Image (cartoon, rainbow, N blue to C red):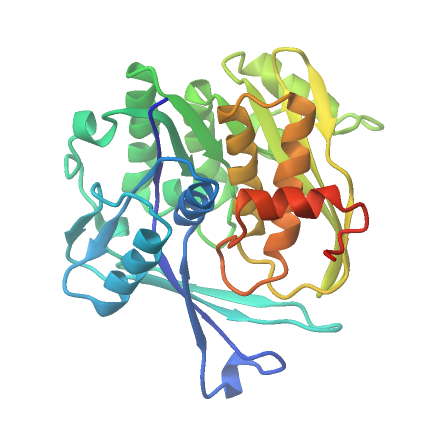
Length: 334
């Protein structure tokens, strides 16, 4: 099996101390992430052979530190390129009680957002790659990326590579009118899709039908795009900003079968940022290892649940720890 390549923007994440607002914080906790970087590190923690591609600013200590985090998880970064610009960042104000968390993005003029065509040799970029993963966050970076994201998934498919795409729509980055043509251009090349009922209605013109469940909309999406193999995602029901119920799903587009994980009651959340990327990595892990479909969302959901117990965007649990967590029906290690 070839390597998994993820491609996207690396970000510095700065988080206010618990119980403080950004406006009065005198110190911030620094982590590194980015949707595709998170998936790369999570898959590497599960012992997959992973490459990561991005563009970073030259002679920038924060950018160098972000690479150290990737190297430390054994992610191959040979396809990272450097140039002018800055490292994108975002700020998290942690919510508690009745106050929700707040996120402020600061990505303008980041090195990757100012990329130009032909900075990567696509034959080299996709050399020895079996799965290519990218998200809607990267496609949303600029007008250039609206088009270049489509070109990348096309190039991957031309080379016989499986494409994984997480729609990951962010209203702070682009409008529905901007996102719809980009998503619709990308989807004919996608094999593994992270999407929901809401995405099917909002971006692909599938009519909302009263009384129909998620499976109805995912099946309609699969019929519209017969190239799809799997559609997956999670549902969260918030109880407070620091607790919610969470369940994962996996839809096999070829057999028209929906598989659900068990439901997790996440009563004390340390940090929820990156949990969706943890779930995505768990799904890709199951597909790549050719697990039984019913078992794939169970493992992915367990990984995502554990992600909520630690600070930072990365799931720092090995496969045996996740499996041990799953084997305990009360989710309590003894």
